[in-house]
Image (tube, rainbow, N blue to C red; front, side, top):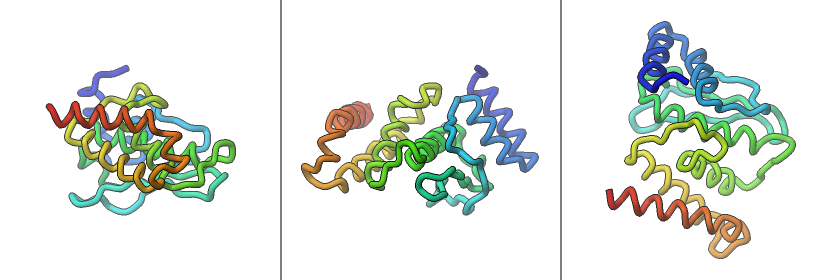
Length: 172
């Protein structure tokens, strides 16, 4: 695998050529962020400083498309790679084989992946200020599962991992 600096240079070259979709495919290949339920990538809404969204679209049980902002690579590659992993988790969750109906559960699993890289182990950690945000968002979705619910009980050990990581980050 190439170094992060080499990858950033290649991505920057694609960005300068206006080849954002090729750049995202390159990152998916480099970090092995793949799922057979992915139909492909398309452009979505432009990212702003207040909002950077990638989205997974498609009917449950069908192939999915990940929409990315055309200006994706105006943002740090480590953020982009982690957001891509998040969305690829959703691609798998919406497939015919392992459909996860509850949005809170889907989001919890995707944020957990951004922190621990269990499905996509080549994905590098984002900087701690971003990991803190990922952990807090994940815990928000955990709370939305319902106090003491079966879903919360299913993920209680993962929640403890997230809380421990968040504590470590906050202690610096």
